[in-house]
Image (cartoon, rainbow, N blue to C red; front, side, top):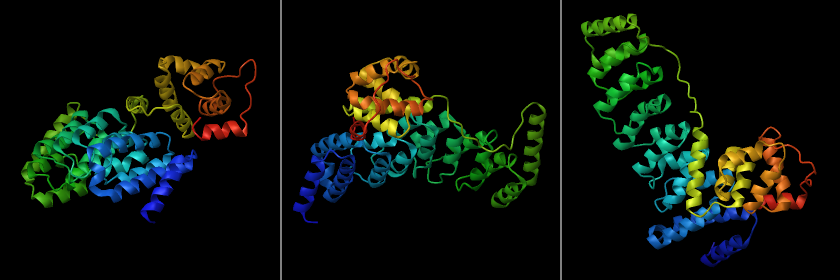
Amino acid sequence: MSPTESRDRLIDLARSRKPADRDRLLLALADLCEAGGDAATRETAQQLLSSIFMSLVVEAERDMRRRLAEKLANAEWAPPALVNVLALDEIEVARPIIAASPVLQNDDLVRLLVEATIEHQIEVAKRPNLGAVVVAEILRQSEPAVLTALANNTTAELGEAELHALVVEARRISALRAPLAKHPKLTSDLALQLYVWLGQAMRHALSERFHLDDGALEKALAETVREAHGGVRATDDGLVVVAREGEREEMERRLIDKLHAAGQLRAGYLVRALREGRLTLFAAALSKLGDFPPDQIRQAMDGPRPDLLQLACGAVGIDRSAFPTILHMVRALNAGRPGQPTGRLPTPNAAARARVAAGA
């Protein structure tokens, strides 16, 4: 395609209000920036690109955001604000960005460990060539699933002190034992400490690898037995990953705050959240857009009538004709709440559904 044809195509896509065309525009711009080389990394270009991409990605469908994330995963020109928003998105969207984006710095990765879900934290721990600052934060939080991912990451910046911390954790986290026993940076002293928590096959492999002294092994095993009789008990249970209560809601709130601070949180985002089945994200966005207390939004969604929810949606720019469709999606995700009004709301017609599909 010639430069003129490419320019005309972008202009046509930019003029269109169809969601599919906006999605195509998003990927076309990414391709254009990739072809532009160093020009896209200049400060003035970065400011413009950040504004354009953030404006488009806010209302993009999940599959399109995932495709964009894959395209930007190795892009040095990608705007930091966009990369950080994608890193906080659903894990299928965030995974390629967390795994490879050169734009994500140590501070960004530490922030993900603090703000994001366990799934996101595990992806951070898997990231190649993980720096010491990020490793330290993983060890500080001591989340079993994240520690296990770190133990399996042989490219992470792990010194003897960090490996010692993981060996100590292996006493309570059985899933750590196998990757630590195979870790290329494991020392003979740490192998001796780890030995007592391993099964017979791994003990044999570790003993052969480090030529462990039989006397030292017997002493370590005897000490372990004494500790066990004193009330310390090791288990061989498998690792179970359970999300901390409210962690996803908290991550969604932070994502909404980032979008709002960037001036990219609009009524259309509410529709996208509902289409993706993310009721808590819808509630957080509605609360932020209308400056409503979160408890009031929750009450509006759970109440016996939809009046309060209708008022809240109207206050943030949802067209009245589109509200029946919004209400239908909320009820589908919220066990039929809010309840029926005294006077029935109009049934969503084709025009209203089309208006919602286009971003309310």
